[in-house]
Length: 126
Image (cartoon, rainbow, N blue to C red):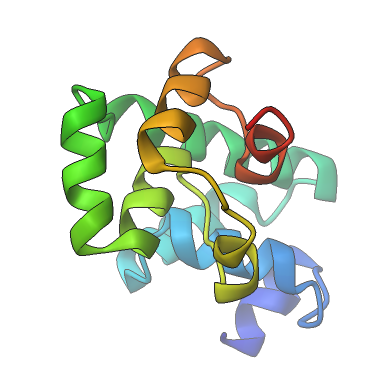
């Protein structure tokens, strides 16, 4: 991550959760990152987080699976990317390893919850 970003947003480089989400919602695209920085450089931390979450919600609406079968099929090919697409948040190996149920069950729980439920919150219901 660029130190200029830390300085512009006044967010410590060690705020790994924020920076991982920043990378995720901007898709690692420098142009999207520059727009994000430009829009948020005069905002406080809470406003920046709200902007980040609004981008996540937008991505959730744009990248939904059409069915449980579609999700399960993608999950069998690429577990991490399927889960990241479903929840629109970056997931590491440790979080993914917590999933002990079949993907169809997880998808059904997700589809009955608020569309913006977080992965770890969803696991509480599995």
